[in-house]
Length: 136
Ligand SMILES: Cc1cc2nc3c(=O)[nH]c(=O)nc-3n(C[C@H](O)[C@H](O)[C@H](O)COP(=O)(O)OP(=O)(O)OC[C@H]3O[C@@H](n4cnc5c(N)ncnc54)[C@H](O)[C@@H]3O)c2cc1C
Image (tube, rainbow, N blue to C red):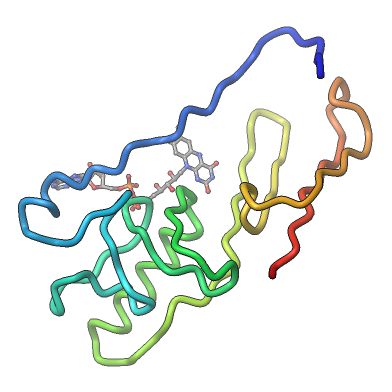
């Protein structure tokens, strides 16, 4: 597939900063490993946000998510658990962004798509691209 364009923007992702957690002896595997309560391998340490490898209850697999909404939600879940109110992670992850005058929204696991729909044209400012995911 060839796409004519003026420039190419490549998203290279991030590497989680886990050195301090590793030195503390926490389990690390593509991020700090946490359970559904965001508890690490140490019973008194919780973690959340970009840096955690957590069990996603929607997609039934371990993931690491690099979006603001996930990070904020993790803070709420970890805080409740630390305060003694049991709370499981239960979020359909999403991301939104405003890039100049372009508004972008996406929900779910974009890596697990079954098919991609494109409505409109990539050359137009207004288009809709849907990634269809079937949970199995
Ligand atoms: C350029 C850019 C654009 C983005 N745009 C969007 C967007 O449009 N929408 C969206 O949903 N998400 C966006 N994101 C992602 C979003 O910013 C992150 O998902 C979110 O900030 C993660 O929050 P966090 O608290 O997990 O980590 P961070 O916000 O990265 O906070 C971690 C903090 O820990 C500190 N730290 C690290 N190691 C140590 C240490 N050893 N000791 C003490 N402190 C330490 C860091 O300095 C940092 O302040 C963007 C990210 C980037 C980089």
